[in-house]
Image (cartoon, rainbow, N blue to C red; front, side):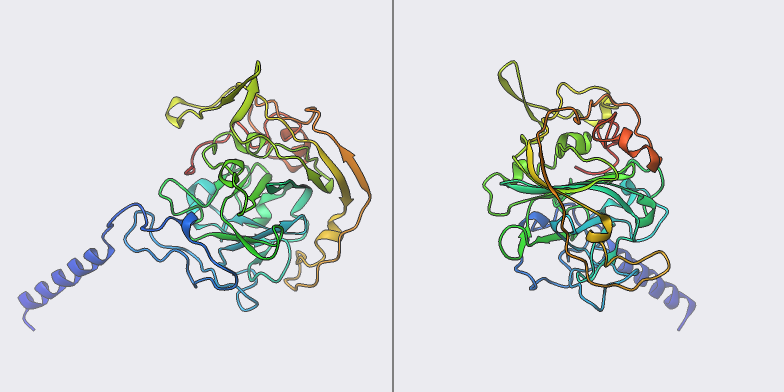
Length: 358
């Protein structure tokens, strides 16, 4: 082949490669929140669209014993109760949530879902609430144990995203808390500053999209998942519904909060304090009861999670544990968890940077 012919061949090859990689659009033909599946009939990858702005789905959705372990890229999460849940976290250390929110993978609290397992000792306190319309878990953790950057304020994951592909892209969730195994269509997961909240709404509920609102990504758990969680305490409760995120009553008038755009700067104050709903039938548990199946620091073996039992109490949402929403920086030391958070200055609240899509 002549030099001229070879040169022409190379140009054609490069042109073909660029054409194949060309971005053809931003929005998928079918939004992630409109992709519904009956477990276990899920595709290998939920997000198969090509040529969109954010690229392709990192992981996969068919997850089982062959995918479970420290290298899993499973993006099918579960949330049923205080002992059985998954958090969206990085697949490798070194990048903040805001940088890789579309590529997060499932880290779960018990074996059997084909995912990575949350290492023993990561979770230091949890409050689980089961309400008429949703389930909610708020907790404290050492986020570095699930490959998050130390001190990262984090972000929000949900099945929508600015481009309707979700964060993570292709991430779906199932639950056994709503009668059988059901796909959760509306859910949110905030995590960062050594704490998190996870909320999943009943797919049969008429107001699921309101209770699991996804547009308040800059005001965090304090306003999206009002609670009375305390570090070093593990409890599971029944509870009333909270108000819809962003909706509050002042002077007898029901008001809907409008989150300002990031271009206007940090949110330093809030016009309201989210109401913490009353809870009852609370059972106090221990981490050893809940997470017997998690791997230790020196082992990756899995086992069977022990049944959780405990004493029964009740409490009301008196407001004493409601965040103040002052906008002061969150602490990052795990020893400061009880003061940074739900009962303190700013639990994943107004200091959240909007580095992530809504």
